[in-house]
Length: 88
Image (cartoon, rainbow, N blue to C red; front, side, top):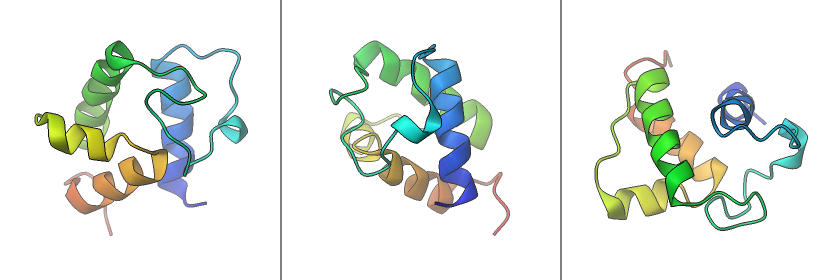
């Protein structure tokens, strides 16, 4: 698991106030929205704001959002490809 994925797990727990979840509980390949974590559409809005604030990546299209938030791995890949804040 790479550093970005680890950071995203921690940030999701913080942003979504999932106090009963640890980073190890989040499978980067499992369904993110509507999956075992109980993430819903309101949570997605909070994640969109977090991604824009933390990584400078704007997700303003529903179709892109559905793809990006399908799994944590998909989210990490999208941030890697689109963030001006990440140094390669």
